[in-house]
Structure formats: C-alpha cells, structure tokens
Amino acid sequence: MPKLVDAQARRTELAEAVWRVVLRDGLEQASVRNVAREAGLSMGSLRHFFTTQSELLGFALRLVGERIEERIQAVDTTGDPRAVVRSMIDEMLPLDRPRRGECEVWLAFTARAVVEPTLAGLRKDIDKRLTDAFATMVRRLADAGALRPGLDQKVEAERLYALVDGVILHALLRPGRTSNATARVTVGAHLDQIAPAAADER
View 1 (cartoon, rainbow, N blue to C red):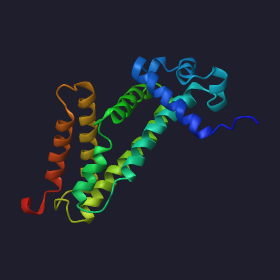
View 2 (cartoon, helix red, strand yellow):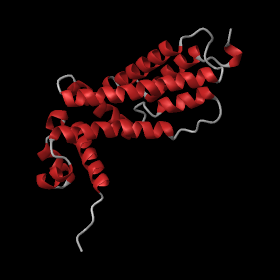
View 3 (cartoon, rainbow, N blue to C red):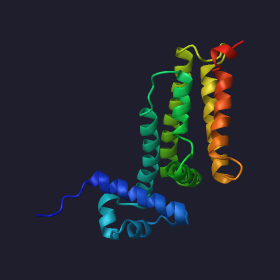
C-alpha cells in the first residue's frame, strides 16, 4: 500500500524550509532547488505541492501571518482588557527564537514585495488583517471603558500598529539596544498613556 501523504502538512513543512533558508542565507537563496534540498525532497516532489517559486514563497509568507493570528486568537480574553491587549501584542514581538524568526522572515518578504507583484498583493492582504487586529484591540479597550476619553479609535489603532512595527524593527536591527524588556516596556508605556489605570486617570 502506498504511503499516504498529508498534503497540508507537507506544504507547511516546505514553508518552514523556506523560512530556514531565508534566515540562514537570505530570501534570494530561497529557490525551488534550495528549498527542496533543505526539506530533503527532490525538486519534482516539491513541485507536486507548489508548481512555481512564487506560489511557494506566497504560501510561506501567508503562513507567517496565520501563525501570528493563531497565537493572538488563543490569548485569554478574560480579565483586565489592558493585560489582554498587552498579551496580544506580545505574540507579535520577537521575544523568543520562533517569534524572532517569524519577524525576520516577514521583514525579508516585505522588502521583496516592493518588486514582486504576487507577494505585494499578499502582503497587502496580511497588512489589512493586522490593521483589523489593532483596531479590534483598541475597540476592546474602548468597550471596556479603559480607553482615555476623547481619543479617536481609528487614529489610535494606526498609532499602535506603527509603534509595534517600529519596536519590532528596532529589536531586529539593533538587538543590543532593544532587548525584550525594552520592547515590552516601550509598548507598555504607550498603552498606559492611551488606557491608563483608573488611579492614573485625570
């Protein structure tokens, strides 16, 4: 009896092989040949799951976004809404090796998306979903009465997204200056400004 292959699991394994090649050698080395070698497959076997390099890279990028979304959705949403939002943002920050790897892969793909139409469209889709995620975070604060009165939710969602993007970029590009603690304190200080504890409200 021939061995059954879980197609989705194999596609995920190939996407993770893309990540390893990108992290070790750079995105320009993520060819079908190199990824197949990294995954321990022949090029013919890889093409059974992805017919083109663009399809392979697109799936690898999409998987980064899905992993982040899954972790955010798994956060316990009971209790203090400020703590909930902080926990959700923690899932995006490069606070450990897996999350740092995701962020580094995301950064590499973002640069490539400038000149790769297929990736550009996918990146815009993921960006839209992240934008919605930050809007949901701010709305959660507002619905709980935790958001500082008078603030525009749409503006604050954009500000929070920009801040987290910047913190991630600094953590990747200057890790000696932006430690995990610094990244979390920076985000926390901003959240304390827009959603102060009751005792701090004026």
